[in-house]
Length: 130
Image (cartoon, rainbow, N blue to C red; front, side, top):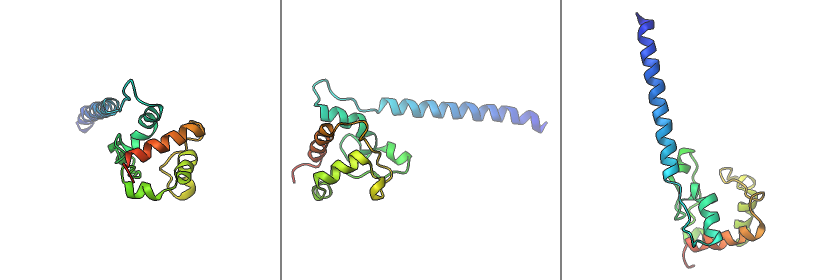
């Protein structure tokens, strides 16, 4: 009798898990920001590589919270204003691990130095005027 009850419960658990995974994946895809057709290269790079964690506006994203990561608030003019271009360049190129921020991936093998420099200007724009 007990074994007969386990099968429907197991099937229900599997179905509910599948629905949850599907719904989560769908939410992830639907909430993925897309650059407008006239967007600059820096904006396209930011939306494609950075906004997953930092959010479209630089204030953070719910996706980062899923992985228990607290990305830097790129819209905070005080914090970003205190960071040199070299610091931002290094953390984008080499990632955060060398400075104790392992949640920040390295993009040195993905982006050229010129693209990183464009991205820095874009990020500074998110923070507004200094």
